[in-house]
Length: 319
Image 1: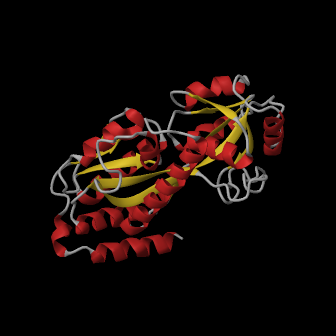
Image 2: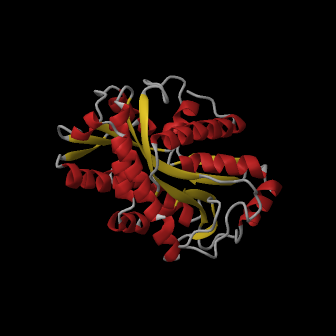
Image 3: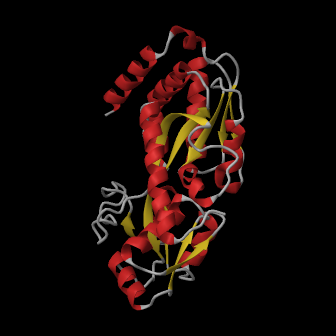
């Protein structure tokens, strides 16, 4: 896998015309439209450090929070289209068109997709003493007691929120969504069963699951996770076709030269295959990806369609 990834990076680099070889010519900035400490922040800092090592230019990581990532992403949309200012966005970038009537940018046309950097699996978790021992227990209770189940999320409009919406839609349930300002604020209420269930990232829940503070009922990925091989997928547990995750990826402002975008994609893909980077990311529950700008563009498009359907099924109206 790593050998193929290095080969892909080399191919991308050869495709970049000679004029892009001088890039970067000045310090770079990677805008993280979220608080420090999360998956996209970790990815940005690891990638930025390796950019500096490879190209000799300093890279500043700038956290610009607010409006589910809109503020930081808008800053990059309006930056000079030369590749020196990038955004490392999360899956909320593809969800926001379903949440906001008016965005200060066009989710597709205002950016050049560079490369998907990572995915983060989600886990369906409950309190350790919850009466729900399996995912089917949750569904059975919810069908017998409409409106009595609640699900926490780390905030409106993120993949954890929409994973819960997709779950209740596919399972035919009526649940109350309770958004928090981050996972850490939601966990105490979940651990004490003040809320019934939560879909949250592996990165945010792994330590609590291993420490017995939360119990995992299912994972949202197509395959079981190596970290928790005994935990079934949501599809295995009774909802075939269910699959979600949160993710991250680099965007450049629209109009950034294709050769510069290709060079950024190639170098990022090379970085994500480095053993020390992979080790850091996997230890945090983050799975490196890499690839081409074309693959990332297609992925963003498919995510926008997917989450748009979830929002419609959930009756979520853009505000």
